[in-house]
Amino acid sequence: MKQKLTAVIAGGGIGGLAAAAALGMRGWDVTLFERQDALRASGSGIYIWENGLRVLEALGAAEAATQHAFRGHYFEQRDNLGGIIESAPIRADKRLMTVRRPQLLAALADAARRYGAKIVTGCEVTGATARGELLLSDGRRVSGDLALGVDGVWSRVRQSLGLEVLHEQAQEGALRTVIEAMPGDIPTADAGKYIENWNGPLRLLITPVNDREIYLALTCPATNARAKSTTLDKALWGDAFPAWRHLIDRVGADVSWGVYSVTKVTSWSAGRTAILGDAAFAQPPNLGQGGGMAMQSALALSVALADVADARDIPAALVAWETQERPLVDHCQKWSCLYGEVANLPDEVRTMTIRAAMSNPWVSAQVFRAANHIPTGTGHIPVWDQR
Image 1 (cartoon, rainbow, N blue to C red):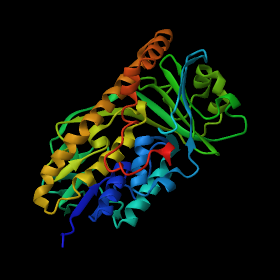
Image 2 (image 1 turned 180 degrees about the vertical axis):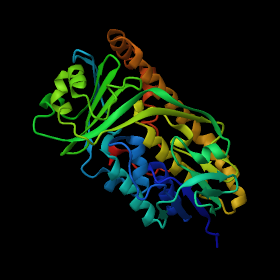
Image 3 (image 1 turned 60 degrees about the vertical axis):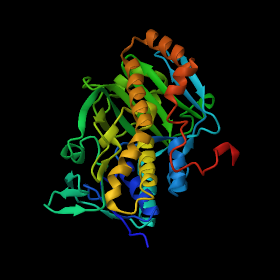
């Protein structure tokens, strides 16, 4: 009988829980360590494109993760005068949904536990070795045939393995919050749309997450102390986006601020220890693929390890996994950073640039390459509009 292999995972976020579920469903004995005293989702809402939705289906978490979720049919960008820059329809077979992050996290945690994963909270990982070991803050070492660092942009696993090439914070960040939806909030003509509004260096993204709530992301330069204040300057943001002042005025105290980060590494693994998610390839959220890339990389990892019978074979399997998956992840990171550069353009130039770029089939294909990708381990799932 095939020996049951063990995995220890640092980080109870989206990528870590997806990895725990994916490995667990393939027979691994998985233990996940989370620094906080409970599983908590940072941020408010999250975009899940077709590639991420397929991963959730493969993990048996899609129904719980997307229950009551908003599924839009257009992604629209508007200029500083409220005029439409671009209104792009979303194909029926390339779904996009927005959900509350806590809902997604809970669905992944339930799936991980269903497949036998053990989740230990209140346990900080301070490092790792290439021998499949995680180092804990209380001095203990926990080991597995495989160790995973899915511990975020400040990953101690990445740092201790010497894999880091670059970790830099971007020029932009975002305030994120969810407000209660009220009748008439979204004009009838705008129903079913994700709307991104631009005005100078400020951006306002308006996204329903269900019938009761609307997710707002307010993006600005990290140097703008007034704009980035979590005690929201409603006058500033309302003047910038007067058509949406009624939503801005309703923002309460539950507002988070985060600067976008970019991480680059020499390799996704060292020996029997690997990293993924923000620990390996953090990117600005401009393409809505941070969670999607983490989940699909986690699922692909479990597929790459499915036929491994001995721990000695794990390093080679990790190299093969990275060789297959990294080109798309690097592509997505590059284009997400490129998209963010248009925030530095004057309004009129930005409008012309976006219109010209997105009307070009080649550029559009690059922007949506990840969303249109069939992730490893999901090829058996039918295309949505053929079900």
